[in-house]
Amino acid sequence: MSTFAVAFKIALQHGLVVGVDLPGTGAAVDEEFFELLHPEEAAHARTLRGFRQEQFVGGRLALRSACAGLGRTVGPILVGPRGEPLLSAGLCGSISHKRHLAVALAARDTGGSIGVDFEELDQPRMGVAGKVLRPAELSAVMALPEERQWTATVTRFSLKEAVYKALAPRLQRFIDFSEAEVEPDTDGQAQIRLHLASGPVPVDVEARYVWAARGILTTVRARWA
Ligand SMILES: CC(C)(COP(=O)(O)OP(=O)(O)OC[C@H]1O[C@@H](n2cnc3c(N)ncnc32)[C@H](O)[C@@H]1OP(=O)(O)O)[C@@H](O)C(=O)NCCC(=O)NCCS
Image 1 (spheres, helix red, strand yellow):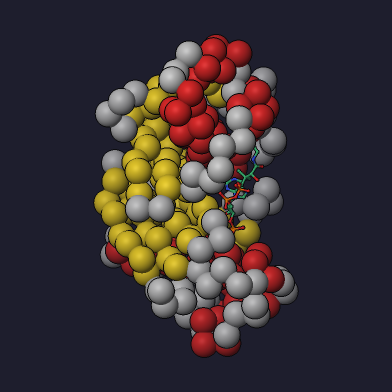
Image 2 (cartoon, rainbow, N blue to C red):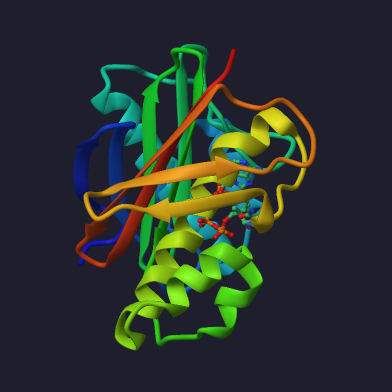
């Protein structure tokens, strides 16, 4: 696996997704990779350490590649007030990373906002379910055969993380896991019902999930009035 190489590009309903391999060592990133970033991104990356540095670099490279795939060149992708990636006008994007992979979703901005999340299927830790699922979601998961419960939990968790990334930049506040109820269908779509405590409410939220080679990839698009 070559470091910071593009691992895949997939055109999905909510935009173009690019995956970039990460070294996963936590060692300082080589200068040659900083040079692939915008100088302002590189300046920020140099302030980071360990895994955080390689994840930031990989995420920016993935998002730059996704934007290029849409035929757009972008200025610096800076860090917004709540940690979200800030893109040039006319584009929206989102980033997720794990130890060995960074993924980014980019789309033309048509009055919407998007979120992406990637999760690996680690060893089951069903204690997570009670922390991130609403009571009705928990009941639905626990009604499944035991061997499917962890996958169902991770899918719902990932969808909620993608919801967060699509909504938080507009709401400009933390959104609790209880504020979205997600229900994956069997065809790669998921139903989202919001229970927002405050803030603007999108007129529509749609979600998709797909099994990628190394885990589950979820995308969300919100439309605003
Ligand atoms: C912010 C959060 C979603 C990030 O998820 P994570 O699993 O820690 O990390 P990921 O690798 O998937 O995503 C990290 C990327 O999220 C993006 N991000 C961070 N904060 C963000 C925000 N407020 N809005 C949009 N994107 C954000 C960044 O691009 C970041 O990567 P970068 O710093 O390299 O640019 C998570 O830390 C969190 O706070 N979750 C709890 C809130 C939640 O999910 N609620 C559910 C609501 S239904």
